Image (tube, rainbow, N blue to C red):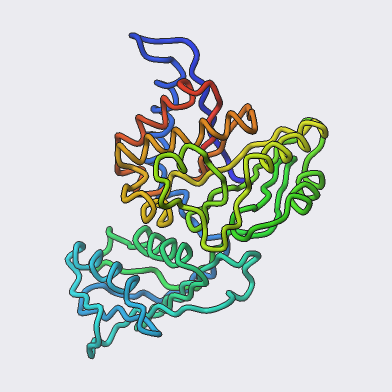
Length: 330
């Protein structure tokens, strides 16, 4: 189970909620440790080094050059001669989309294989590809001259099925739409007296939580998926009632600390914009009205959120404004 921080403002210091001050401090402390927390789930280091002293080609299979362009641009910002098109560079980084990563206990996975002349990046989803890029960015050894990526095979994944340990668990209702009966069964299986269950309703790639506030904000479009598989207000109440009857603490989970393409396409605003933050608050208010949770999880703090102090300030005070504990996963 991922470690977490909770925010529940109460007392005040210089007119600010005391817990809001504390949570902002904790958030900033977490940013300093971000590199240390980026370890993959599985790694087999080697003595190889992919040196960054000469020209590097960053390529993508199947014509999808978004990730090769992104990594090449970052390498150039690091003063590395990198191109994202065809070149004869002796060192190459290649992105390859695959259906499965061997040994990964989850479908949302990546594997990075670093040798002296090549880096192979295998990924099963857009989110996994972005995490692979972040892994490479955090792996670079800047103390050496020349700088390099340390060799080895590194894999990471996020479970899309139900998983859990130590009395706390996650139930994934976002990756694919699941019936209320199926989710209720999963909640019963993982829940029970005194247990906390995290029910994911919004992921970086799927928005399956019906929010009347968002429907009012933009009647012509919503972040709901094309299959229209969403959990309606009535279904949200049913799921909350299931947990209440079993004395389970239900923690609705909205991954809102990382960019959400569906949200941005529907509203034309990033989550981290002023308008985006207003809509995020409206979504959580809808959740409070229908599910009455004591806690709401906002997922894992992403590099994009870390770079925007407005969003950190916003999150640090939001729990107090809504009267609910906010949980952020490390």
